[in-house]
Image (cartoon, rainbow, N blue to C red):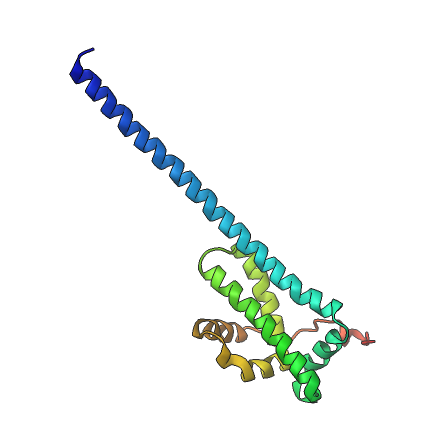
Length: 168
């Protein structure tokens, strides 16, 4: 093997090493992106679980939520603060999720199911009242998103109260 052949072989091996390195970097980037998506989805699930957990772990909050959902104006001042604060917290969770979804970090099917939940909450009179009070505190992007989804919100019997069951 002469010097020119050795040079050509080394060039070929160097080029091959660059291609292999690029392939490895691409694979690592895909894994990092998947990890970021998985983490965002986990945070999405945790954020929404925290909302539910607060309702069943915080004494009196479920009652305030139930009453306030039907009529914000019927609540006394202290309960209005609790209802508005809790509703604002849920809106902040959805705002964060909407940002993550817009960045491609949230699975579309899971996101679609949470949008249905958002629309259920948006249809509640108390949620509408709090949105009217607090809308200005959210990003323009989220305001547009929320208002766009509100057009598709339908009032539903979320707690089985229209079927003859009573709240205790």
